[in-house]
Amino acid sequence: MNKGRHYAGVYGFLLILALILIGVEGFLLNRQAKRLPALEEHSLETAPDRIEGWYVRAAVADVRAQPDAGAELVTQALLGDEVKFLREEGEWLQGRVPDGYIGWLPKKDLEQAAPPPARDRVAVNVPRAILYQKAGGVTSVGEALLGTDLPLLAQEGDWLEVWLPGRQPAWITRREVDIWPGGKLQEKRTGLDVIKAAERLQGVAYLWGGVSRYGIDCSGLTYIAYFLNGVQLPRDADMQFQAGRPVAKQDLQPGDLVFFNTSGPGTEPSHVGIYTGNGQFINSRSRQGVVISRLDEPLFTAGYLGARRYLP
Image (cartoon, rainbow, N blue to C red; front, side, top):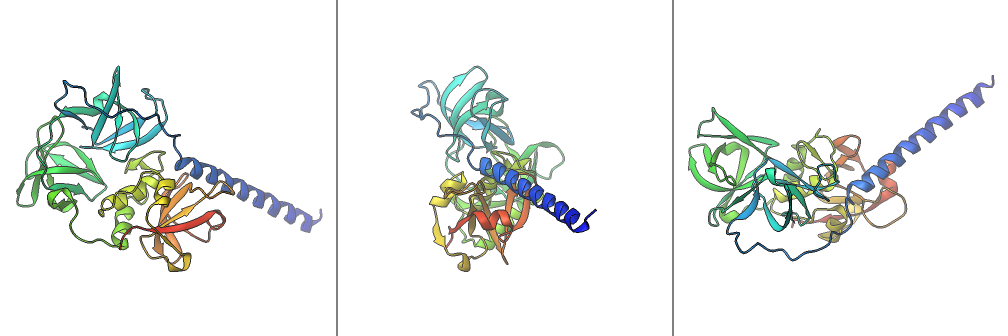
């Protein structure tokens, strides 16, 4: 046997296998940020007999393309999010969620409720916070996930009372939330703060359309990380690419978003991550979940489209 030809054949096979794997991931990443074509718009309205609005009562609620549990996941909404009502069909409700997407949510995850007047809010800054029946803990009544924001009703020492849709108020510990006076983040945040928010979900599995510790996609990670730092980005990578200020590659700073087309030639982003410095970025990858990746990986070197900055 000619060993040189043998080794060449082995190396050739490994190279082809590597290219195939890169191509598969590229396809999956491309699919990740382009979940659905634009949905047909309807006039958002509330039926005349509805004094109360619809709000998410589950810790996280799936928003699907059709009124079917097996339909494609469009995005997700978090506890307390308002759903702008469109129409009902059986046990499903169609509406627009805060990230702008229109889809179908199961009614079991929703509640008609009248929130308290505009007031301070709390934003959960840990992957999972426990809600309790009373200040001091003991009896759990649910959970609130990273990025959830709820009206603040009262404070007792290190405990905060929050409003829940259609349920009795609950208590949460002060150390697990940020307080937003008047409903908005008042303090200035930096790119390092954005990175810290994203790092809290490091190791979380990838989920197409996901926005929480139970699964998240690339643009869901950037959306939540920036939301917690006072910036509401568009939900998808291609729309995020259209916002913000362009940044040259040599001028990248921690917190900037880096965009890629991972499906071959093209200028439309299919993947996004948060630059962390030293040629690295945190992102949610289809087969790895939330991890730190490098700009010089072949997949990202070939598909790099540019960067955007959203903070001063």
